[in-house]
Length: 168
Image 1 (spheres, rainbow, N blue to C red):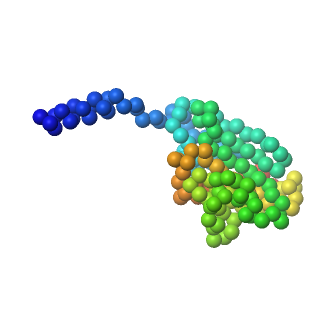
Image 2: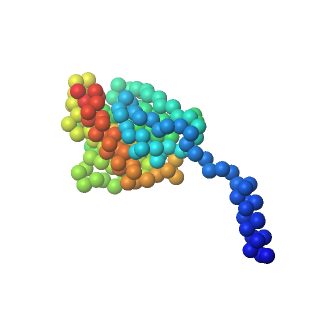
Image 3: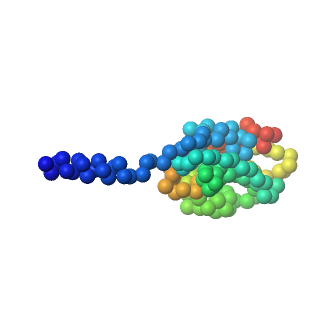
């Protein structure tokens, strides 16, 4: 009898609980006009109904792409041109989600579960002579952080930037 009562109470509790939120939108296929695998971006996007991608250029050396879910920013991807003589540690500390990130073995890739900064190797652009291009990704919700997934997303995004019109 006690087992039956327990099952009945658990059944009532689960019937009263809120349904698990889900994603009712498709993850974007590009950021800053650069193709991105939606399966790599999706883990960093929260449940919600709508997704919107916006792009701005606050200064000529920076291109920002923001992914909003239900009107709240979720992921920010940046293309940042920095002067060649700027130390990579300055670039990293300018991106809050990577301030405390460990340095990669090749010195040009920093990432945590919620952010990444990566040098776009061999990228040249006549509008940015004597500058190096870095990609940056930031995730708003720390509960969605995943370092291995961030490493994959950042590496793929940076590779796509290398092949984009940004690197002419």
